Length: 447
Image (cartoon, rainbow, N blue to C red; front, side, top):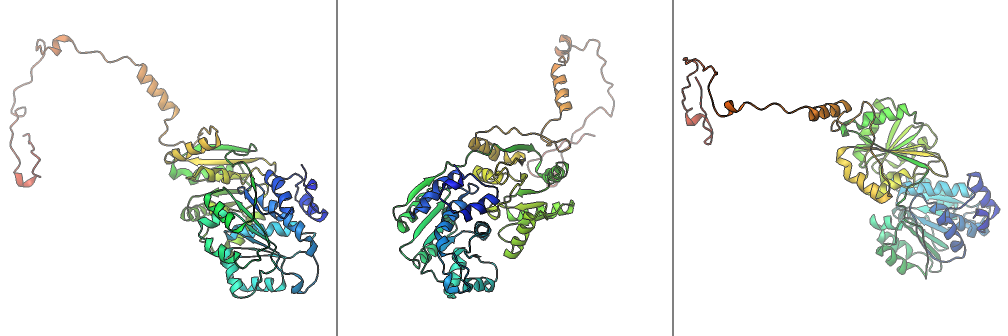
């Protein structure tokens, strides 16, 4: 199927085609017609499946009738609200919306915490038809009376499971209580967990259900390589691989914020352009780092799983798992950053002996055998060298040492010279005073 068969306007199709897309993904093919029909939708789709376009393209089609070039804020009331759990994901959705509205005079903006509210307030007061927001910052603007929700026609809850996990349920309920009851609600989640179903039953009207097969299989376009290495040699091996493979750009995944910061500093000392991105970084710094990476000004982006959620870099050639994730699903998400849109990609994992359990879980989930390899100069200390294995085989093939003669075993002294009976050979024994030693020790001194 083609996008042109889904009932989208020429203005939207033109913007899509300029991005190099002509065929929808499975979630887009299933969701777009349902959203266009104004039905509530409960969709299970993970990051990297094209879910942003699955809800934004039909929303733009619905809002096209409101498109105008008037400068009056009254002509641009809020019509569509997208709630996102993280600032990074909200920002990425905003970038996509600007791409899709290139030929439509619809206004859109993004608001999230961690940055000054004033520029956001100015944008909102100019009037916007589409708003992408994190729940907390949206409530801030509502309290400041810089946004009105009374004309919202479509509400999107993106990554609903994560919003619940992050404790946004009360904020979501508060926001929903301010929205018109006659609206379309779209809920996208990685799974149909019981909490998600309860949320849907509370706020949705007979929703249609769409589920894309769980992403437990990896992209065939991605070459997956595992290298065994001692943990203390990982950074040196990473630098070697980046330079020897001439990686133009790479995302390197760490499990914690501390390890991401430390690795970025070490890579900088190795002469590489590297920066870390995680939740403790100031929002302005994160956006600046992401922009530099997307523009090709930054070679290595060291990221945690949460910070990279929603990050979309076209034609990313390499992904490296510096530390294997505890959850095998995160491995699939990580390597899904490369090999997109038909392009080839390489995913490299650096595995230390302590990460064997994670490696086995990844193989079980992906149903792949990922045999660890080694790199010359970085062979793990716990792995025998080829020459050591050969010497071990030689020892095994060597004949056993001959046994002593029976007469010796029997204690015969014939032909055996007895030692001279001298003063030095005689042994006299005395005990060390008990005060000098722990109670349980008794030592014999030979003189």
